[in-house]
Image (cartoon, rainbow, N blue to C red; front, side, top):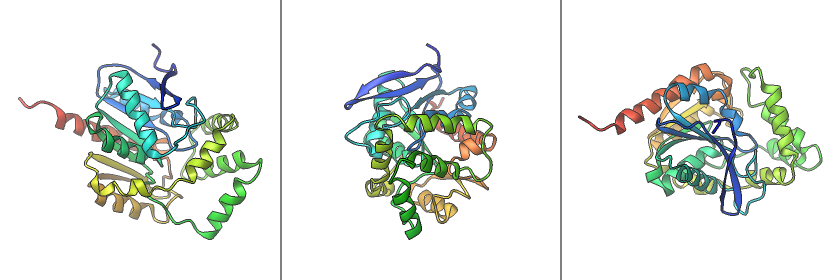
Length: 277
């Protein structure tokens, strides 16, 4: 089957869309952030395949080709979906990559199904409730109040790439716009934005999965992105990569820098898991 061909798995009242490069290498499963598409891993995936990894990319609940309407949009539920895909493909254990809220999904998958998860790469991770300013709260209220809400979201999405935008940025933005205009998808985004991350924050000190945090210094979702990364690394006993100048998508803005670091982390996990002679 073509690696770029969408496959579907029915689970918990909806369908999860995913792609699988196949192969016999260790498995990496990548989950995009809310409102985004699995294409956000378009630069990282070939680098991982070249390094000998099998890569599965999935669309999170509400977005892409995954079903729009669900009874549960939580990070934990998306983590269950990731595990379901791994079991369906007979592909575990895997390292799970999660961007933004989906970093929590990676940790939840490891918490709930440790036998299926060998590592986690957390990209611009939002793992706790952040305190928005009054202006941010007002902007969100106005931005999602009318028919301009898709445009408001994609304008915000644009702001997450402060260093440079990829050559195909306009094409990806158009694809996200089309997707969010499909029935139920903006409602899914609004529901997801309204969820507390207190449950995810509560498991940080309990997490045992080897983890790498990749954070851009100019990630606008944080008051101090570097300090956020350091705090999370302390709780998770995680490795860190701080990407100077990058925003919320360091793996998309600066793939030439980020891909080798992720491959090195994965290679370390592979070496640690290899049987000793």
